[in-house]
Image (tube, rainbow, N blue to C red; front, side):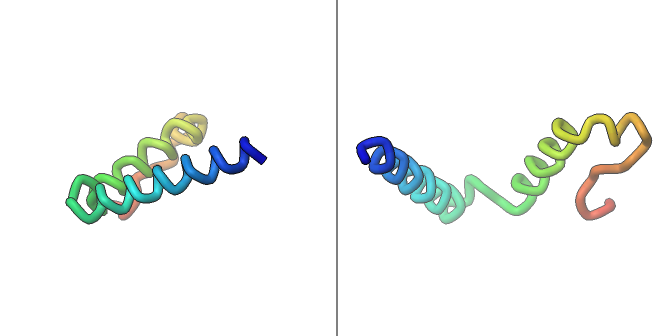
Length: 59
């Protein structure tokens, strides 16, 4: 029970932080796109070796 309460509080803390960062323009759609592309490249690196373009949006 105590573990769940701690996890719930941590989740709420992170969600509030994300909301405030978005609201104060620390997080932008461009930054989120770059992070998504980086995560795709990290987890799907073998596709890059096969010549797959993992850029989101194509430009």
